[in-house]
Length: 398
Image 1 (tube, helix red, strand yellow):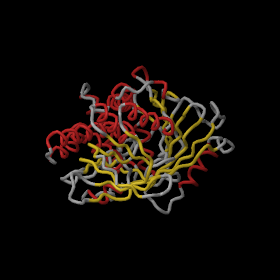
Image 2: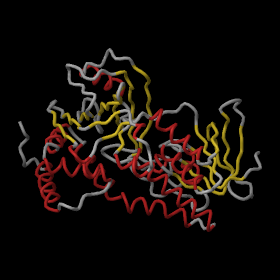
Image 3: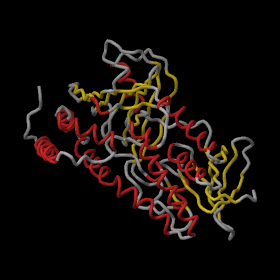
Image 4: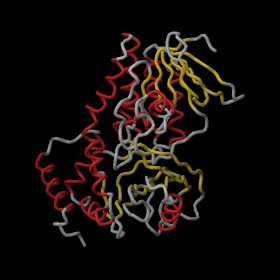
C-alpha cells in the first residue's frame, strides 16, 4: 500500500471527474485522478456556448457548430428550429474532449493513474482506502485519501457501496454509432443540423438523434425498454437518411441516468458527481454541461470538508446544484412523462415545437441554462398552448 495520503481521490475521468480534479489540484490540493483506460461514453456531444465560457474550454475543441435542430414526428412531419442570432449548439467528440479535460487536470497538478475501481476500505487510519486494479499487471493497489469523489458513471461502484440508494436511479440505455458522414444526402441528412426523432418505432420512451461532428456524425437512440433493439433503431435511421454505406468508426453503449440521487454523500468522507449523482437532464438527456457544473460544485464541497473536517460540508453540493438547476430538471421530467408516452402525444409535441414562443424560450433556456423570466406573457401563452395540446383541444398542423 502506498504511504502517500491524498487530499482527494477522484474516481472517474469524464467531464465531471476531470473538472473536479482540475479545480481541486489548481487550488493546491493533492489529487489523484483514477480512470479506466479506453472508455468512451455514448453521447451526441452537444454543448452550449456557456460551457466554453464557464469552464474556459477553447473553441478549437468543437468539431462542429449546429445552427438549427429538426424535430421529426411519428408521421415524419418535420419542424425546423433555427437557433438564430443568440448562439449555436457546439459539438464535441467525447474521445478528444474528455482526454483534453483529463490532461488539463494533470497540468493543474493532479496525478493520473489508470485502473479499475474495486472497493473502498477502512482500517482505522485517517481517511478511506481506495482499492483499484492496475491496468497493467492487474495488481490490486490501495491508496488513502481524506475524501473520495465518485464520478464513475450511472452504475457507479462508489455510489453502490457508499451512498444510500446509489447506483439504483432510473436510467435509459443509450447506444450510438459514430460514422464517417457526408456533408448531406438526398434523403435529408444535413451536416449543419441536429436531427431529433420522436418516433415510437425508433424509441418507445425516449428519442433518436443524428448529431453532426464535422467529418463524422453520432447516430444514436435511447430507451429504458430492455426488449427494444437499439441497434435495429440505429440501422433504420442510417437507412432512412442514406447513411447505411458510411464507415462506422466506433460503437458505444451505456446507461444514462435521468433523475438525480436523493443523496450524494455518505455523511462521512465520500461524495458522488456527474452521472454517478444522476445529473443528466430528463427529456433531453443533456449531460456534459451539468456534469461539469456538478463536478465543480462537488469539488467546492470537498474543499470545504478538507478545510473544516466537518462532513456536513459535503451535503452542500446537492443542495446548491438543485437550487440552481432543480426546477429545470423537474419541468423536463414532466415533459418526458407526458409527451414521450405515445406516438399521439409525440406528434403533438413536435407540432408544439413549431410555435415561435416555444422555439425562442427553448433556445434561450438552453444557451443560458436557466429558465427565462423576461417574457411572462410568452410563458403564459406556452402554458395555455401546452394544455390545449395535451387535452387534444388544439388541431394538429397540416
